[in-house]
Length: 392
Ligand code: MRU
Image 1 (cartoon, helix red, strand yellow):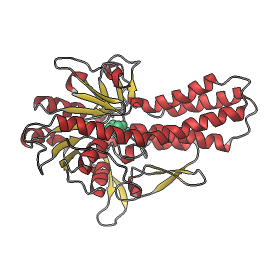
Image 2 (tube, helix red, strand yellow):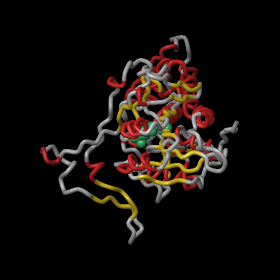
Image 3 (cartoon, protein in one colour):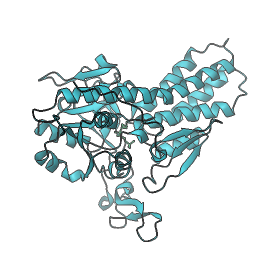
Image 4 (tube, helix red, strand yellow):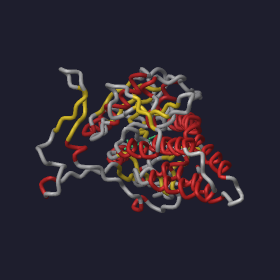
């Protein structure tokens, strides 16, 4: 039996930390739009700044956006300590929760964090002092960010153990280890550290059981080629980028042992919304009998929705698919270049259309298991759904 301990690489290299907080409580985020070329820290002092950073994807990844939203509420409360009644706290904070929640609709972690704050507001009685209520909310905001790291480490271990147990004959024995594929970025930059799907890959790597981590480029935002690439190379993992269009070829020819992805929302029957391209990876995994794992904290599970058809899928502006940001090889400056004809993705004429959903839904019948910090829910043979509630 291989031991998958899962350990925190502490401290994280600076460019792999999405949020940092100084001793005075100032929150800063690394601008993920500029990674991997430039490490630029942006101070976030208000909910408005957090909203803009989340919407523009300077910070992204389901757990990380929930953390930033919560921390921005904490900063707001620290700067406004003169509420004269609990009802004024309630009114102000619930308005901010609604506002922050509207920044991105698909990842439920953000809504879950805002709901936690709302239920504390609801339980506050008029006899409670405003100072007490503010303190309680600040503690929740701190917890939303703080509790993420530990659960990522747990999921990493559980997921690695599960996949190791499923390894195919001839895989994972001796020096070979496992060959896995992931999509998007689910590592330190998307969480408070260690990551979800990348946490599983890291646990395999740390136990010397990873032959290679393949990662999809994940256009149009290139979370794979910019961010996962940065994380895996910084950790010096054996890794290989795969063009999104080459996933079929990879599975046909390279004996992949598992596809490991994160999630933005997992609903009651196990259907899962995750970064666009996840569904096609699942279809291909199914075709090639490769285990397909979804790894996400309990805060990503939304038992209020029965099936994936009910998930609100965010559509991103067309121009995000017709333009690419990168480092100019001659000047070394970051710039944005257009790769499609002028006008495509920028207007409402019929010829200007771009289909650019940020996420897709993978039906549960293509998913082998869902891993949370509470355990592993495996789909039973022949079943169309997964008992997600059993790991909540
Ligand atoms: O649009 P993004 O970059 O926020 O999408 C991120 C993903 O889809 C991740 O897979 C998901 O949020 C899980 S991150 C641990």
